[in-house]
Image (cartoon, rainbow, N blue to C red; front, side, top):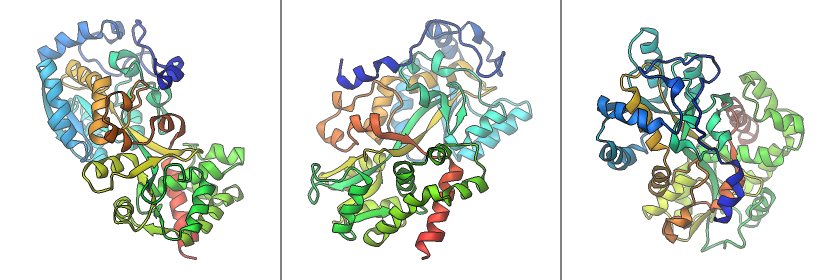
Length: 414
């Protein structure tokens, strides 16, 4: 057993052979035409696969643009070849699809799709409107047995018990050019980054917190690394805070170390208005270290838009990330095929292929890129041991917005 796998073996989720129970209720909120209460991971395929093949097709909704080629050219054809089930693939806006599903449900009409890949920001509406089936997919689906339980059962503060399965994980990072700063010399602490930036003015490229996700992620990571007050630190992950409470939080004295850090950093860095702008400056040699998204760096390096010498790391106090998931809707017209499709997408091989093609991380605990990727592909990713030990969940949207607004009003305008 590899060391990484051995270290986490004790927290792997297992697919125990017992019938699943509805999440947060004494009854399921959907009737797919077969007995959910008798299903478990051990009989899933024997019950669901024949029914899915009899249905013969399903409709799958995807809210992304970047995953289009992955689904249409790779994953969907692989599913169709394996099961002989046709997939009608549709794409669109996450919020619009959520509202369409809610409207269909309220009108007593079938769900527009049988399986959904929806942004995590929609999960509150999905749960409050009871359009996401309250089935603990993480326990039911055989291919969901090796997911990180924390990530697989709670999303953006909503405890859904595994009804919304993490398909895609993203991660902010620190990008550096080893032609200028070696892996041995690159700073891996916040204070180290500040010292390096002071010694190398304009060589640390930072995306603005209001200009791109890598910038807001870096600001969040500063907050996690610099806030020491226990109550304040707990509030950073409090999803119940209102907009006004979040605004009050970021202005509290306990947040002073965060703003003091940025006030020192800002005069010696190059601030950009977008994630691509930051990467392009690194690529053109106008900077040596920058804030980044792991999957974006992976893509840029694969297309030759960043030098092969580029590398990524996570600072020791951690950096934030997030992700989006798939769910089974209430009222789908092809329920068995929908369930089988989601199970397929959670499999080890699909999650590994997704990482290889898109640089999209997985919540599975048994994914080790070094075991099957080329050295060049592995070098484009954050080191796996760092990803496993230093990845942090993003703060709630209310706090993230408040952090960015405070930054603009009190730092940029000074």
